[in-house]
Image 1 (cartoon, helix red, strand yellow):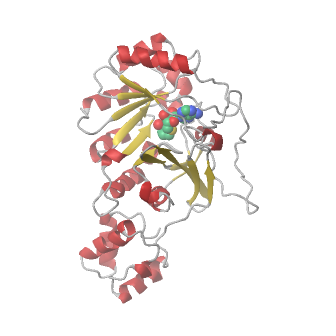
Image 2: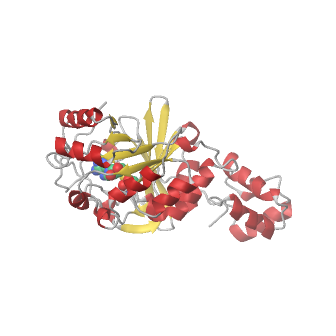
Image 3: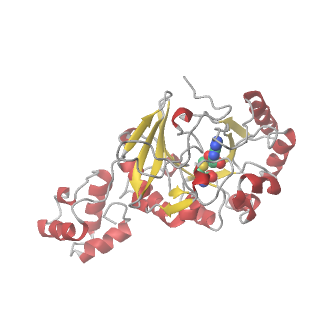
Length: 361
Ligand code: SAH
């Protein structure tokens, strides 16, 4: 690993090893995260002999990687393919929405949680990104300076890679790093404990919890992680944390036709969430080829939303973006570098599924 992605504590060790004074770590961090340099040689306020010694150890490159492919959706969403972990790639999406521009980034190549309706889940798990691999999806993004929000909702279960996720959050928010407000960052999870407790206590970022059913047996079929990590425990943990002020909790719920979209489900969900200050975000299902689930239609989703509102919850419906380039929720699936001839060598074939309607506006 190069210098990029190191926290201030790690850079302090590096600085000491190269005989720099303690503020040397801050100088390096400033070059890496405020000045966005790519090469050690550009860190011109470090003594030349120190730069040369660092180059001898790390190579001149700080460790950032340019994206190797890009796709643009007709709705303005962009999808990038970034190389990670030598042999793999991950996808990130940039989603414009009025004044906001959200970056959706990945934390793992593939995922081991195998949610039934998620394309990443079908890939299996291939590796945890290191902090630099997570941060690079922001740092090397052409739209970087226009990004207003970052959501950890791309490929992978962030809490299965908690160490790297916490380090990247430190660098995103620290004054020596990108100095972003934690209210611009959201981490989404199926509810892995005790990693969730660390996310609550060691960061101040927003938390999104993928619930999808208030009934344990049914949730197990949709989100197999329920068997080991019942969502009721995650909700109880969040409730006890008394999260308030600027910090928000978002509950994610995808209504499927005739499955989890009934009035009984809305009532049970409201009961499960009682006493938790949260917003419920209904995510219309993005069809996945070969998966025999159908998303509820719009009137049905609106009825579900209305029922939740009657129980006093704030409930919104997420605008689906980027489905035509498989950049929408649950559709990220490329983990292989493209072939030399430019062909997309993805191991899940994208074919139009029933009910798959690319948005044209
Ligand atoms: N592993 C994390 C983050 C990635 S997914 C998590 O599960 O929370 C981000 C959100 O997209 C989750 O709420 C997930 O359940 C949802 N999602 C997955 N596949 C989807 C699909 N095909 N259509 C709509 N939402 C989907």
